[in-house]
Image 1: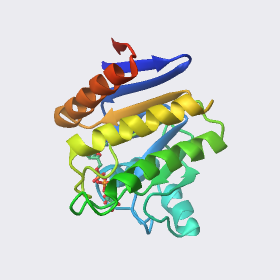
Image 2: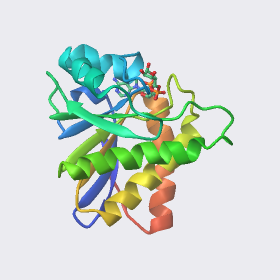
Image 3: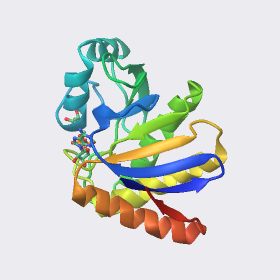
Image 4: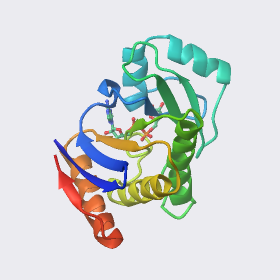
Length: 188
Ligand code: AR6
């Protein structure tokens, strides 16, 4: 159950669920700059994916805020994990919005470099990093939609929201974005 908008053969959809269960070509991890396994999405991905992900991440060594790097996905259904580092929210006036948009865009660039068809994202920065959901959701969706418009890969982006509150915040942002762009909203 979810909601989606389509742009030709491209789809942006929202579901409520667990990022570690997605069978998209890649899933995105809400990582930290040191790429050392933490809690939240990061903890769940490393727990279910097994130690090979952290080993590969350790060889990469780190990733600045607003950037993204790729590893394999160990035992997960996805083929790749894209480790994106979102900003820690301070006051909303310290460049957070640009860095959050960059974390989404850079993740999508990694997917495009690998010519992937589908990518699933969690809501970056809205857990331990404290970004308010209502502020993060429109930034995430707008950034993803403009990337889909301008690129052939990926064709499907799925936002996987953990719980009702996150889902509703993103749903509201998608309704507003669809209206602004003149796109139809589909329930499924
Ligand atoms: N599937 C989808 N979403 C989830 C899941 C899940 N299994 N679990 C939590 N969420 P967070 P951040 C939601 O804290 O804010 C780690 O320690 C959660 O409700 O995972 O970017 C890293 O190592 C929230 O809305 O990521 C970093 O140090 C969203 O995912 C730091 O946390 C993101 O919450 C990154 O913090």
